[in-house]
Amino acid sequence: MKISENKQPFPVIVDNLSMSYGAQKALESVSGTFEPGTLTAIIGPNGSGKSTFLKVLLGLLKPKKGSVKPSYAKLRQHAAYLPQQAEVDRSFPLRVEDFVCTGLWHKIKGFHAVSYRQHEQIHEVLEHLGLKGFEERTLDALSGGQFQRVLFARLMIQDKPIIFLDEPFTGIDQRTVNDLLKIILDWHKQGKTVVTILHDMELVKKYFSNAILLSNKLLAWDTTEKVLEHKDLWKVPVCMKSSEKSRGDS
Image (tube, rainbow, N blue to C red; front, side):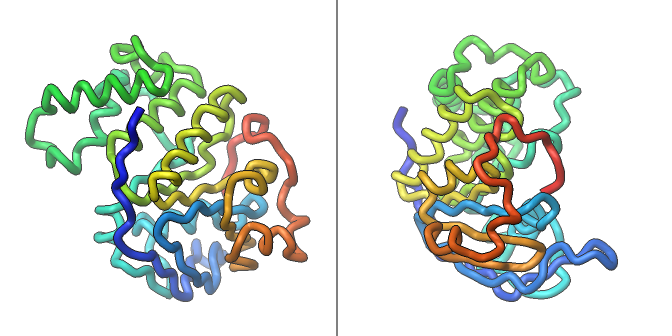
């Protein structure tokens, strides 16, 4: 399946970003730049502020201090976001095709009917993800791996140049991990900017050229090779399979 060459038009600059939950510091003084077309893994121990970092970048949480350039509103126009599965309510009996259609809201503005060609694109994306024939199924009838494929289908139909992924491989089977990893690498080949929270260090070392190491503050933001030499890397679970990791706060 051909993936769009919609590329990031600007760097994303993070300047002295800090975030707290009451008296508890979640992030402290994080600065760095996501250059266009880069593939970055965010690593760190559980509770180190990784998910918080993505949400602050997208304006879903308000930072205590610091800034993100471009503005949150502009960044959201160019970015797609995949939250952890546990954050998505699957109890409402929404059909797979209708759920993937929500990825088109930025194009149809919520008031226009989905075109015939757009319906075709949705079916093509679902087939590409091994979900042909799943269009009429409801979200609550899917396995964890199937639902994650549906979430990726919604990302693909959005066709944004910047993609943020929060633990995309957690709690799913290895075959699905392999299939979704291929899509992430395809996005990168097409020039998209991909930022992914990961716990499988083998995947980080093998496929990701850049990495960020967090432990409620920024420990390292550099090439993966340099980040993996950091003295505090021992705090990160090494070689843990993503499909074996239980869900939890990042």
